[in-house]
Length: 337
Image: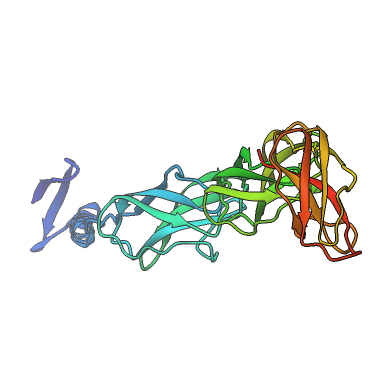
């Protein structure tokens, strides 16, 4: 007897006959169970592959750049499966890594967002390259690279102030240090310099007032000046970067008066009469005049002296308390403005 069988997979109709109680099956039809089992095995063995999250970090612009420090900024965009360490690494060459000693370690982080680090012990006027990083137990992810340049150190800022108490050989000068200098902790030396020509420097006459670690005013006496002479003065401050000078000011010392001693008269065993004539006040008012004497040459007002008024012109002095045959005198004049 002949039978016809239609395949449910291919739609093909196959013929088979039954002989002596046996059914003859086409060979192609035998493949159907095998294909079906293979189909079931394939779909039962396939599982949905899990997608692992990846850490993502970016490097932002560096801020608060100074001579030896700066602030690094970064952002965690995705924490992946969990961040065990993050921070920044930097160098003077491209593509810094955490293998360098110049890095910060901020620890684990369980949420995305911004983070910062203070970079210290940098070199002035130097270009640095920096990258943020974040890692888990298996991998390290770096952010994009940024660069920045530290600031240069600068000279101190100083202003020369005023001059007062001018005499024929000295004066008092003031000044103000307005700034120690960019990236400078202290002034190594400061004071005043002066000369008889303009733009004096520390190679000329100067005072040395030492180290100064703060801004503010200071003053100093300048001495051993010549009478009736014009001097130019500048304040100065020296830091590790160099020497800065303040503005220039000038002044003229008092001139010495011209005085002639009068010959001694009325000489006795213990007294005498003298005096003098002041023909030139030296440009300043005469506030005290008289004669001075001693038993040695060149007496001064540190010895015996008289006080006989003020102003120019002639004056008379009475000399007393002398010892017989040992007198000596000369006219003096002192000035106070």
